[in-house]
Image 1 (cartoon, one colour):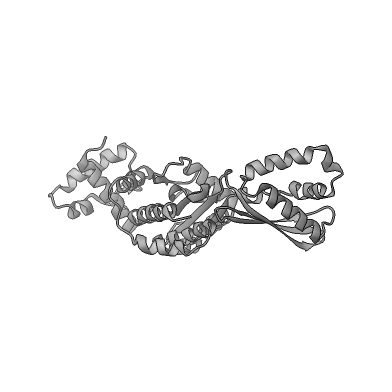
Image 2 (cartoon, one colour):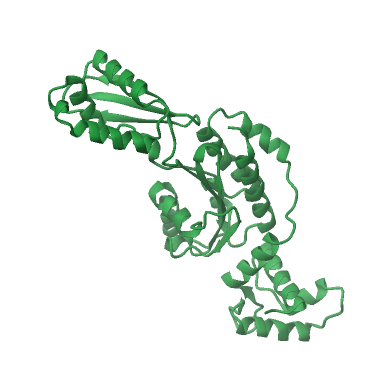
Length: 340
């Protein structure tokens, strides 16, 4: 347990390092304080903090720099206090104009980037309980069909099926009508289960409609809504930050941000808790070496209709934590309270 005075000194060091990027000297902290705490006393506190793993000393004569442990303590201290206000009405107005939950999730990444000037990441994860509103099948060519699934919460997904034999437009219409009439309002999970059972029945071998349906089923029919969608904005903001990265490491970082599978793994790994609480991860080297000096601040939100959304801001350890914590908190709050 750190004493209140030690916490004040630690947080002052972190704040000054965020602002300057330079090692912090005891004399600099002493000048900020109003209680006449001497530089010598502060040096002793800093030495204790170094022994506890909160501070590093790059050189013998240099000041101290905060470690990831110090940044986490600093960020958690902000998270448990009152975060700065935000214009919730403005956020709500922007998001409510988006017609579907998918569009709202996508725009959330834009808002996070705009509010923090870092990288906004949002993953929309459909729930298995999503219910079918209707299916559309659009012929693109003799052997290619666009499958469009619309769920009752307004979520829209599409996927191109590559067929092994032609399916005519009339057959596609018949399949579409069959699915919509038989399964409208069913959960996607239950539809897949029931379709699988029906297609295993003997009549599927001689029923032309079911045989064609089997082809589309094998291409992922009604599974297109189950794949998480990842939205990322603001990667270009990293170019203007002094990250002390070589060109090669910066290139590796951008490659990592382009891989949606890696981003989903990143969110799953560091936002594993599905509670509404803000989560702070300092140092992302376990996810990718180029992210060693980065922080992730995120939250998991349950949107109307069962759409789970993981949203986060990725930025350097020297990010503006109060601003980022406020942005994630308020965008998350608005997103989960919007009407369906």
